[in-house]
Length: 586
Image 1 (tube, rainbow, N blue to C red):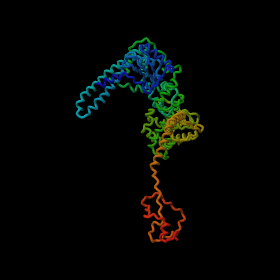
Image 2: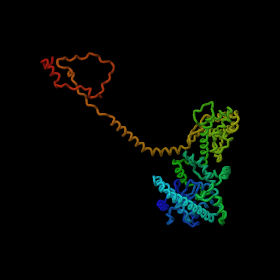
Image 3: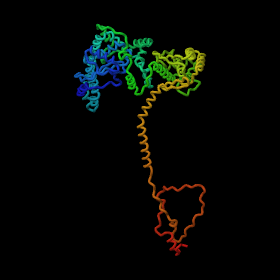
Image 4: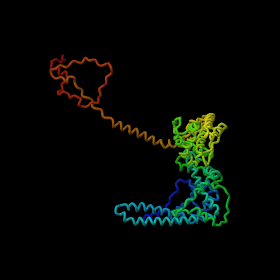
């Protein structure tokens, strides 16, 4: 149990800011800070010392005072989806609920109980179980491990029950200050906002940020999605089909229906305010500070982002989503044998038109149905798969040729908007071409009139977009790529110099170690050394050397090839003088 005591002592230590959050100062959002300070005074507690924004659909508070003994660093976290999706009074109710946790001392108690629970489970796993697996001690430590396991379960049930009761207390305080109606609306709206935020991230935000493009006003872009009537109806139907999961005794929050029922019993004199959006609490323009969203985007993707006007960003995101969906058509088309072989795995409009002109539309529809194309991405019905696939291909070709643009569709694939009458006439033939081979042929003809290359594969590199209007090709993410390239060049310059120096040193070392010392020059041997006494030397050879070049003898030979010198030291002239008696050797 010493580990438990050590963990409880560590519960009051500072834990630092939550990763993935950025601060927002009083100068950046004066209205938000004024609202939080005013609510803290009405609740009866000190305001937070820092406010940080996150990408979560949630709000939270943290108090780093050790066991509440002295004032510590108080931080409040506010999720961007709440700023975009809630009304001003609803956000005030949520902030009052979080400040009520400060006033009632819930923050440091919750931190202590949470860390105690984590430590108990860690102690059971790290301090008891390793010893329980050592030979004869396995049985002897079974009792303490069982006791610690039961104590951990009891500790969780008791501490989580206390935290659920604290949620009811914070709801009551916030309802008396802001009003139960505003808080109930906020609590009921947050699950729907979470669903919409997940759709927004999966379809638009995550792919576009991965491509280096971010909207200049994220709150307006997400608010546009929530305000669309068709998407609101779609969201309400999804919420009705997905009721709140049943909570257990191990949940830190009570069920939503219980919280709403408790709020319905509270009577408050606070009048319901206007219907202004919550983002109006940031500043007069209702926008994020210029440095806040780029910092969050960089934390999210770890790369530089190029800011785009949010309406243009939505069109580019729709085009990117369509391109990614068209890349998935290779699987169903690959199930069908075509007369014209495809050299690339990507699908083009010509592949579809060839099958439709041959009267194989049902076969193509069956292949789309077998691969469930478009169902996971847009929830398409089986009868809509082929028209949407052909329309996406034709629209992609027309947009690439500069004959139209994509408009965002929050509940399905993008909508094509033609730029001229010819493009509109061509796109109007998509529906009839699905079931009529003659209409498919007319569609091919219309696309030729629009100067569209139907054989060009639809899939382009992810995150890039080209515009071939007037024969020009522009890259949308050029600025982001240039900035990223410059950063990479700056970082790679010292590395490149080091690699070059290391290569030179390695090459020099190899050359030194691979070069053997030159052998000593051979000892000259006299032409008379091989003639014994009494034998005349042989006359010089009269052989004519060959006309062509001959190879020079190599200097690398062994010592055994060198003949030893004669046992006497007389020079040739002295040797002849003794034999003939002539001073010149006649």
